[in-house]
Image (cartoon, rainbow, N blue to C red):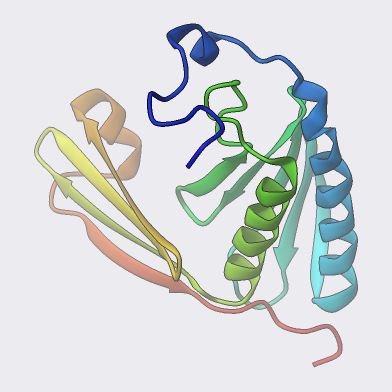
Length: 169
């Protein structure tokens, strides 16, 4: 049970972030993860706005790690995958920075370990993207305007991203 008890958080807690700096630890965790990935895997690193993009040699999905001003971390990978750490940060959600750091580590390990897959289905006026890791499945639908970048109606694809190649292999 959360600290809010059975009644849940008060409405105003959803609009309040009392101590965003508690998530500052995530920037250090992300930097350490990037350094570890560069050491363990055959990747090249590209600077991007707010962070870095790690591109594995010979397979695997690129991984973009952005340090956000909140402070937090945003990951992008595959064609449409990604996540925000923390997911929200408001007082009502009451996310624990250490738990969020572990979720960040798990997300990165799923990507580099080849445990991330995507599926796209384009229909007239709609696109549906499904993402999968061992711990979660996400599904997003996009209307006609939002669906256009994904491709023409009838386009379908599935892709299970391979594991990143180890350095020296």
